[in-house]
Image 1 (cartoon, rainbow, N blue to C red):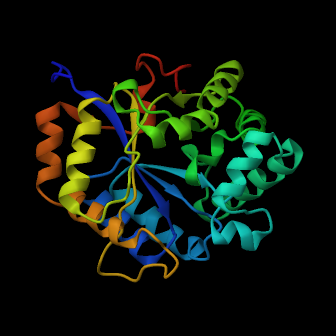
Image 2 (cartoon, rainbow, N blue to C red):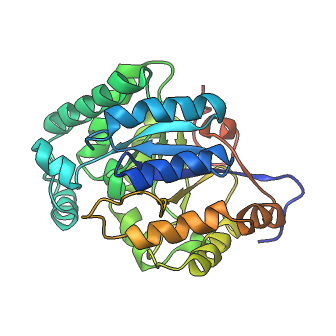
Image 3 (cartoon, rainbow, N blue to C red):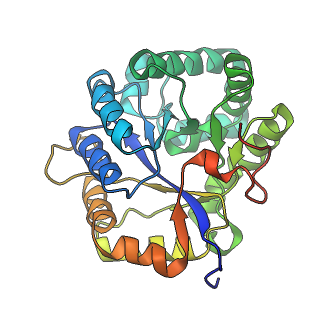
Length: 287
């Protein structure tokens, strides 16, 4: 893809805020540098109530979207009574074993936890390990957002890579419900971002991460979401976090000089989700 005359808009979203001190402090630092335009919060994590105040202060000075990272597969979700491992969650989705009534209650509780400490609705909703588009969960999510937020709902992330970036992992993620969530959102009139880049193998090497992200940004359609998973090396990781070293590599590259140089070279502008309402293929206009 060549560089376009006008910038292509991309929402760069750091996932997993509140997972650990490393993740929260890293995201705050990148937001303060202007290196992010969104973050997604794990509200079941014990840190969320205390970290919410820090994030609020950060957003007051450096405006970014703050959304709910819907969680069915972390240890915190299991402790809450509804969580399972990712393989089990995927199998349930394939078998249609998620009960929408139960799913609605879980979604409502996580939205309540977000709003209780944030003081406002989320700007967007996505999912830890892409559970937002699993069968049974996707339908419940669209119903809850439509009923709960009326004319100003959060935007949704569709976890599907654009054609030039599809590999085995991205195809599995999309097959678990991207088309379903896109269709349901369109039918309900919910705003959504149609393409996801940044699907990663979590290599613990900053140069490799930078090359992969640059390749994704070069092929990102206007209005895409790019997810990332940074963590600061100067603060404690969650001891159960299997991608801690990869988080440090991502943070190193995103905080360094190569990242803004890459954006400029590729003609990419980082924006919040509501700046993409007229992006081709993005579904209904964002209010």
